[in-house]
Image (cartoon, rainbow, N blue to C red; front, side):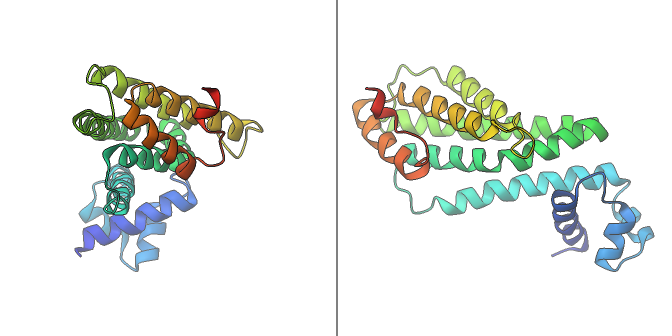
Length: 212
């Protein structure tokens, strides 16, 4: 691993664990036992390191999700698993985004563009696979579904679990609503799978088939 990559990985953990405002370039240099001059020879400023570090963190989260689904043999379960993981990580990502928007808005804009592109491509791929495998009806509007899912996950990120008393209830409600929406896209074959996946991955929320 190169020195640059080592710095990015360590800085990512420091920013996530300690807060992006609290961590200074001096702190990163001291943590890695390098000089501040060396740090600035590799990265032009904190904003560049911050962007690369948070991007690294989000890409690693995505890579871990991909690694975790190697044994899942159907595309609909892959989609539900990934959405569950996105929702579980939403509070951490939301906290980082709030601080970025407040202190480093330009970095936040760059990261937001990257995230939207990655999530759009991922969701589009899941939808196409689900249609191809007969889990979704072929009339499903891919662009509309991508927009709804992205907006739903973004909405979940608004809630701060540490500060809002009813945030967990609201996150559960929005997660439930998202699964109900996806269930509406399903064929009978897909409904059987999504109900099983719901119980498996969202077991703390009442099953959607209780409304039928």
